[in-house]
Structure formats: C-alpha cells, structure tokens
Length: 194
Image 1 (cartoon, rainbow, N blue to C red):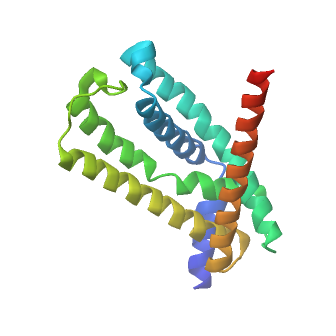
Image 2: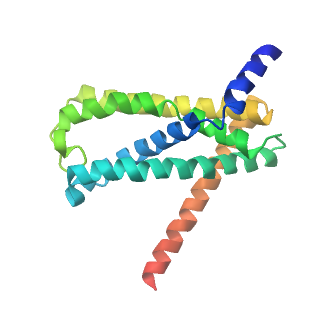
C-alpha cells in the first residue's frame, strides 16, 4: 500500500508542474465557457465564429484562473481542517481532477454541432431529439460527479486527510468560492448603480 501511495505521489505531485495540469484546467474552462455561451445565446450577439473563438480564448483563460484560485482555496481550506499540504500540490489536484472535461467536450461538441450547426450558440435553436438532450445532460452530470470524486480523492492524498475531511475541504472551498462570487456580483451591481 505504501508503494502504491508513493507511485501516486510521484505521478500526481512531482509531475504536477507539467503542462498537463495547465491543459486540463484550460479545457475545463473551455467547457464552462461553452455552456455559458449556449445559455446566454452569445451567437446571436457576435455570430457563430465569434462565439466559438470567445469560448476557446476566454474559456482557456478562465480555466487557468480557476486553477490558481481553486488550488489556493483548497490549500487554505485543507489547512483550516488541519490538513498538511502545499498550494502546489492542490494545483496538481485541481488540474488533474479536471481531465474528464476533455473527453466530455470531444463527445458533446460534435454531437451538438451535428444537431444545431451554426445555431449552436444561438438562443433559438432547432429542436433536438430527446435522446441527444438527455444523453448530453447525463454525460455532463457524470463528468461533474467524476470531477468531484477526483477532487475529494486527490485532496485526501495531497493533504493527508481522511476521505470525509477531504470532502469537507472541497465543500468548504465551494462555499468560499460561492461567497466570493456573490460579493463580486454585489460590487458589480452597486458600481453600476452609482
């Protein structure tokens, strides 16, 4: 068991500085931007090509910012729960935990493009089959579930916490991110009122 833990540590944390952490994080940001662009009908405002380019560029930056922000919050939350970790290790946890978004995008983008063509990012899109809609929703839910599981397992390993304490760390970090997001939204709203 100690040998297995050593191998996982070597793979996850010693290689944590590799480009894979950055690529996986950027891809997760692209997924979030993809879903956001669809939800806000971005294609109606800037066209399909503009929306696709914005999804790629803004999404990649968004994912990299999330890597450093989430890694820092995870590290801080783990220390709060008496975990033993370094922020670098939490960057690796977050980065590697986001790998499921790569195959998710590789599956759903071609499927949805085949169904919606250039109206992919439009508010008004052709009716898609129920199988496609439910299938994409199921894939997205499964991917998010796998991401959360990998976050908990990785946090437990990185911070030397139990699975329960690691889950608490991830939940605490999500709550902290939500509070920060609400505060930023309030600041934006108030700044536009002045």
